[in-house]
Length: 194
Image 1: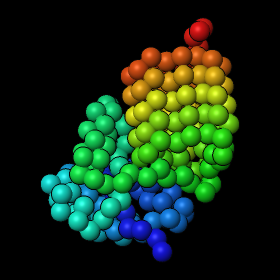
Image 2 (image 1 turned 45 degrees about the horizontal axis):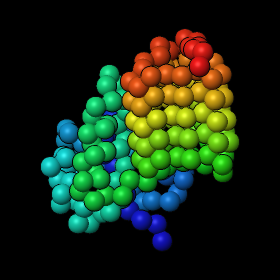
Image 3 (image 1 turned 45 degrees about the vertical axis):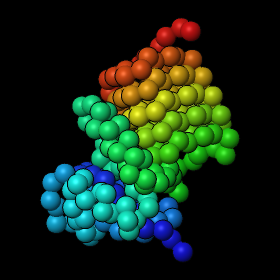
Image 4 (image 1 turned 135 degrees about the horizontal axis):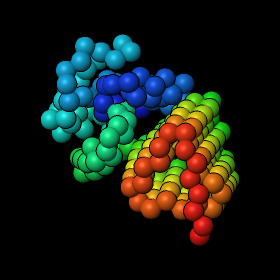
């Protein structure tokens, strides 16, 4: 029997996450929590604001963050911490239309969207977004709280520091190292020597 899960954040990223969660078919979506009152998202009911979370933990043990990383990762980090503090289990979510090597690791609260590829020995931290059609190659490391945007490529043996944002269609050349909280512009090519 599938467990119920509540979603935190009802914007555009939530719509994409719902599609992945429905297709993964491991959870029943009970509803959406958001800072603002919303009528519904993709037919799922509004469960109230963040102040309702201490009540919702009595009924639901699973929660997942479904808002993206727009200008800063701070809200995702804060919300991830709050959910843990309240006792929610924050699973990882993997699209059945993605490829994730059995020899890779994916942290709690991370989502792998449709068409993404995570190859052998790659490690993805907690609370990350591996967005549609992105590629993380063998032996690469992505720290906690990162957003790997649509169509971006992280080649083999790269290290992406915590809290980093890799823009759409950006490429990290083999063995590149990004410091924490890096921002790589969409369409750019990034290279560093170790």
